Image (cartoon, rainbow, N blue to C red; front, side, top):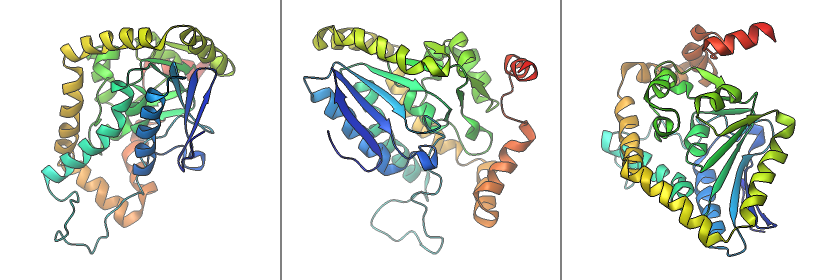
Length: 292
């Protein structure tokens, strides 16, 4: 077993379990966590005992998104340092691409990754899990990218390839969230199951992979991913990072940042989201809520 500060890593019965482990923060993605995640993915890929990886989150959520409190610049700092900050468009793009290189281990590694989603899977959580090869979600999971309302655009973009252009736009032009059940119906995840069955369903799928030669798993993962690359998927990830930096120039993003600094992050998030109600805006989601 390899020790990390922000994730759990264990290899058992041919499966590597990579678990986001900041449950007190709903597994918010700090820079340190993302770096450890990348390291763990490549460790699993290099370990001949591992056939596949199960990526999950500890506690009540897969991940509620990026850690918005980590790595903030001192308000008194000026742009006279050796290292980049987020002052210019190029700096911002550079930082987005640096974080992306850590995430892309999920896509680039040879062995398959199963994303196991429960609770919240929002913003940065979707940036991670949508790079997985297969995603299984709890029916009551909450999946979406609310920051598109006032903070930018997804710096990773597999929405198009999983769910098609119209539903990708439906999600990213509103910031609404959907349940795991609706995500499965739309093709955003492979399947959705009752939460109490999630562990067993994922284990059964992974157990089948452990009976197959890892080199065959690799060949069959990579041909599909190479097909995605021929459709532009990998290039689009890099463009998504630059597009997020572009989106950060919008006036509403500056307003969100000022409100966060002046009134606190909670007030800024309320300003961003409260006018949308509970954020689960599809007709199907509202009908489920009304009949629950």
